[in-house]
Structure formats: structure tokens, C-alpha cells
Amino acid sequence: MKIDREALRQHYERLPDEDIERLAYYEANDLTPEAVDILKNEIKRRGLSNSYETAVETHVAGLGEEEKKELLNRISALACPLCGSDHERLNASKVVTVKSFIVATTTEKPLIIACPDCIRANAKGALITSLLLGWWGIPWGPISTLGSIVDNVMALNSKKYNELSSEFIEFFEPHLIAIKVNIDEVKDLNDLLETLNA
Image (cartoon, rainbow, N blue to C red; front, side, top):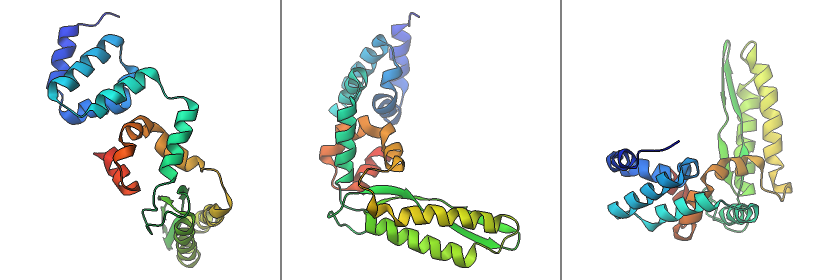
């Protein structure tokens, strides 16, 4: 399908910087070669960071499996955002807290990205809260509490696993190109997450 280069150029000119960043970091692989050229020209015209252009070029070239693995390993080597320790590699685990009161049952399932000790501490707290407060809702309290026990016991055992968890990989994989062009500038995981949410 032929694109109207001038119409596309004008469209990109009207986009705010945040949308240009989103296109560069996350959507450049869906663009036609003509749209990629127009996007790169718009990045230069605005004087935006070279990381945007690098991200576009990386999208076009693609990331190999080894490169993805290396990036994930670099992320896991950052200091723990909860305790600041860099003695153990970061991983991710879902911890589940269930609270019930007669007919109302609430379930919280945050993803914890931290060192194994901090994941275990969060899982232990969630498990205790669920065991004390989760059972009391009819009918979902007992069912949800049993599910939380399974999830939290898996998180408590996270120290035993040397591999990156599927939760860790699934969380970071969509952001790997944005991470690749920014990883050398980030100080810690919180800094990296701020970069991704900017």
C-alpha cells in the first residue's frame, strides 16, 4: 500500500514528543520503510535524544535471542529496588494477598521484582495475611485463600531457582529495545522503570 509521505510527515510533526518516543521504542517494527525514514527525520528535526533513532534502527534490525538474554541478565544484575543489595540477582514473582469479610473477598496480586530474600519476605507477609484474613468470605474466601497459598509457597521457594522466572521475562520483554538504548545510563531498577514509564 502506497503512503502519502507528505501527509505522514505532517502527522508526525503534530505528534507530541511522548508519541514519537512510543513509536520509536515500541512500534517502529510495524512501520513501513518510508514511515521509518520519516520518523527518523522527525526525531532529528526535533533534536530529540539519539536513543530514539537507535531504537528505531534496532527495531528494523531486530534483537537476536542472545541479545535478549544478555539484556535480561543485565537487568537482573541491578541492585534490588527494595533493599538495595546487589549480592543476588533480581527475579520476579507474583505474591497474592486475600482478605475476606463475610460476603466480600479482595485479592491483590502484585508482581514483585526484587532479590530472592525480598521476594520471600513479601510472600511470607502475603501468606500470613491470607491465612489470617482470607477464609472468612463466602464462597470465594476459602477458594481464593487456597490459591494464594499455592502462589505464595512458589514465591517462598524462589531462592531455589537459578533461572529467570517467566514473570520476569514477560514483564521486561516488551521493553527490551527501550532498555537496550537506555541501560548504560540507568543507576538501578527504579531508574530503569522510570525510564520505561516516562
